[in-house]
Image (cartoon, rainbow, N blue to C red; front, side):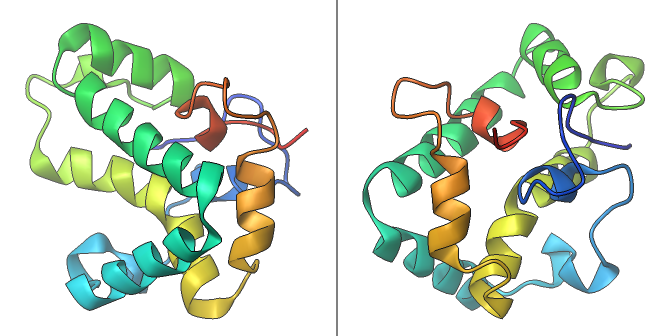
Length: 143
């Protein structure tokens, strides 16, 4: 399954994580410890405000959409998933894990390697303000 941003640009911090090639294997969610996720969570919680709230809301919305065929179709269109979720007889935990790895990777890289610094990633992630759909922030072209 490939996931990419419909409007992404090569220079966009969020969109590069949604490119057709997956994140490096060493970043597979399977191998990342709970302590790592707690560190990532804390780094972005420390950024506070809108960034952390939009992250949480975006992940929650993605989880909710994955629960129905219509929701999975929405995600397939939004992230241009190839083949779309509808092409599968069953969406496996691996498919869902792969999808979420694309959403979490920029935050993991930011927290672990300061690339980009969490404050910069948050600035790009929240550029459209609080009224913006938090899930769209994962696909935006950082304009």
